[in-house]
Image 1 (cartoon, one colour):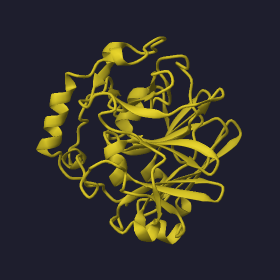
Image 2 (tube, rainbow, N blue to C red; image 1 turned 45 degrees about the vertical axis):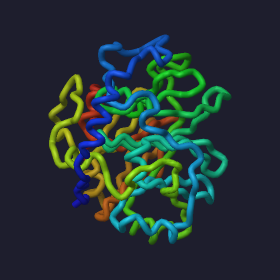
Image 3 (cartoon, one colour; image 1 turned 135 degrees about the horizontal axis):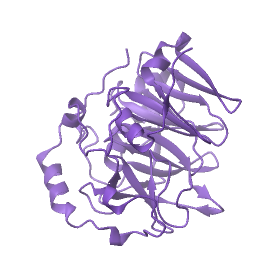
Image 4 (cartoon, rainbow, N blue to C red; image 1 turned 30 degrees about the horizontal axis):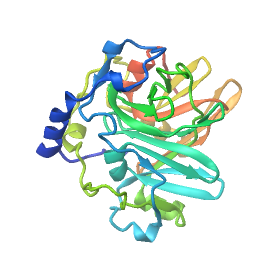
Length: 311
């Protein structure tokens, strides 16, 4: 079975900081032109704009210099050409967005602890290079990003901008892999790993969401509940044109050799999973968007989603 994720409890200091900063948050600090959702659906998560500091071009180290990571610590792996980079979730828990360049591609690696959501996007759109920060706002219990060029809001699991000049538009999504460090050592021993020397004082050995991951309810409510799957079921959500489909990680794991093949618009999708907790997007149809997340958030943001069923 996929390893159950257990994370430590929110500290009193973190809770106090969230409570104290909530009143400082306001949509007036963002470009809400062309807003595609009701402003009442957006929730202040606590920390204000940039209260959770996104990272930009972080220091990378060889795997042997990332000894602070436990063998079971998860990392998000991004490959472009020969460049393989791993972004530890113990660091992403505190920063949520990393603006980096992998190979020759400017990327944003995005992680939202509230729904265990992972996605990787190309930061270029219509010739513009964007840099992303954490807005402090949530939509359907999922992080909202903002770009520093237009100050517009973007939904990670919604997979598009919800305000500004690109409202309703998506960025190009890239394949990713999630795996424990022990699998990273076996698969990509020469990978570079994001250093914990981020310029910020954070307890990267700890995690502020421990109690949350042991509970069974969202920290922030969603507008609708879809009971076809348990709310905390992990899925790989894919949107390609008019096709929106969820692939339960347990279904991927149960496929022959842990390799699930599907076709969308006559193009192949290939997902993999194994007993270590590894989940990989191997092949993605052109123009498709893909995210790893809890079902409750995926279903709330994509209520028309199909659920993949083995033939």
